[in-house]
View 1 (cartoon, rainbow, N blue to C red):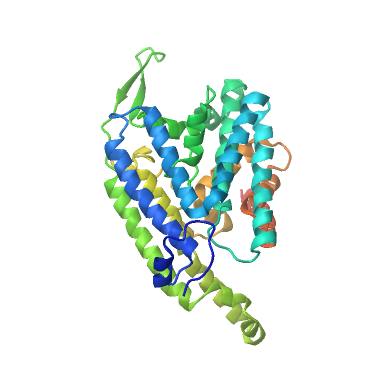
View 2: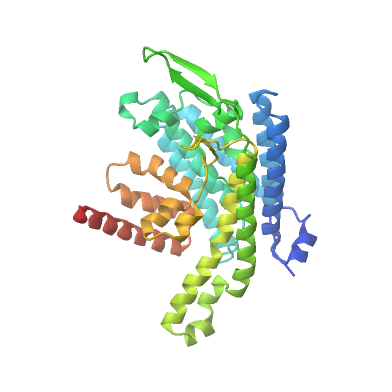
Length: 401
């Protein structure tokens, strides 16, 4: 019987007992399925053509906070505290330095919460907890602060093309800020999206195109036909189903925890340990495929995530997709794996760290990644090893050229 405690609602405890899964995991999955239905309703009845941006912001925020409260109880207040104090910093400090202050505060607040959870409450028991959503909110706070700094302080010629595209030219209202950080589509599992993309979606401008006039200076806007996300959502839900099935069947047979079993460590040969480690980790990945693909499907169901059309005229719904499963499983290098795993986090690291530091950007980026992920020693070992592998691969590439 699943008897693990939770900081959130215990309403689904009977279901947790029936499926033999921890209550916090059941709460997460049920809330995400509820968010999927809410996304369909949001797109159908609160479409930007039928209601105002204000109503869409309010509903998205309230639904998000309700889901957070259901999953994490009063620990969800951390989301509001972190967002609220960061917003005050943005207003008080000003656009010149607020990105630095927001970065230090948001990452520091996240780290304090992670230290408290891991070393004071339940070290070693990794489960769905409030620090997971805080990791996404931290990304959003720091990303937006940098984008406002770029748009309201720096000169256009100082910006890269991507920084220029993402630059925010006015200070968001408190409602817009909370909606971006805590909307129901991304409050539990993300993924990270840019503030401009989110506001464009809420205001119904996702399908507007800008076309230059004959003189190359005049610009006119026209609206494209809004494509349906239904096919993309169904495909991603099928991936979710297969990933969940694979995880529940294979992981039960090959649990990752068995790698540190005392009897296994004492009796198994080194080749056996290595093979089992590889296979058990292979079986563990589909739970991430499930969570991230479901999060992507939720956003798509609401109408968010449209990137444009490919060369064949098919609609692309991968604007905020977080992984490419085929490329991950077929990766032939550490870099290829990282490029296709947790894509939005990689973009965040690039935008807030790698592009903004002049001293050892690779090392600083990996250190930031380790701090953001948490305080387990394994994170630091993994990412510091990643620094060496990345630098070695880069040196080899330059040598071959």
